[in-house]
Structure formats: structure tokens, C-alpha cells
Image 1 (cartoon, helix red, strand yellow):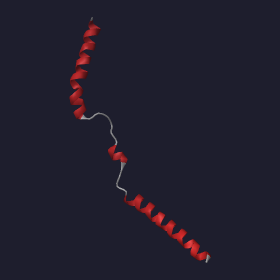
Image 2 (cartoon, one colour; image 1 turned 45 degrees about the horizontal axis):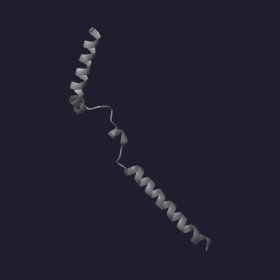
Image 3 (cartoon, helix red, strand yellow; image 1 turned 90 degrees about the vertical axis):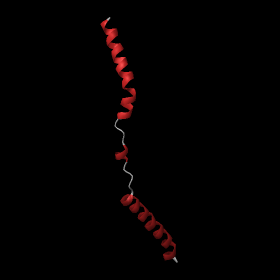
Image 4 (spheres, helix red, strand yellow; image 1 turned 120 degrees about the vertical axis):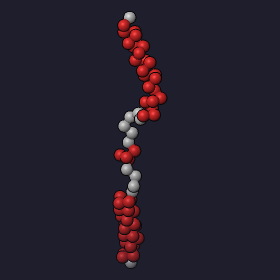
Length: 64
């Protein structure tokens, strides 16, 4: 009878091991591919006029 009580524990352990192994081998999510390294070209194009204008006023204030 002691053998039957260990059987469910072994099957649970094997199932858990299989799930873990399958996840590690076939998980396709790679966060390093989605890492943002800063503003992109669309952001720069949108904000270019503002930063350029503020730089120009900064120069004008400095010359006074």
C-alpha cells in the first residue's frame, strides 16, 4: 500500500518537470528584442520644432 501512495507524487513531479522543460525549450518570448533604447524617429520628427525653437531662444537670451 505504501507504493500506491507514492505513485501520485511521482506523476505530479514528472508532470511538473515536463511543463518546466517544455516552457524553457519552446518559450518564444525574448524581452531583449522588445527593449526600447530611447525615442524613435517619429518622436524626433514631432518634437524637432520645439527643441529647435527652444535652442534658438536660448541663444538669443545668451546674446543679450
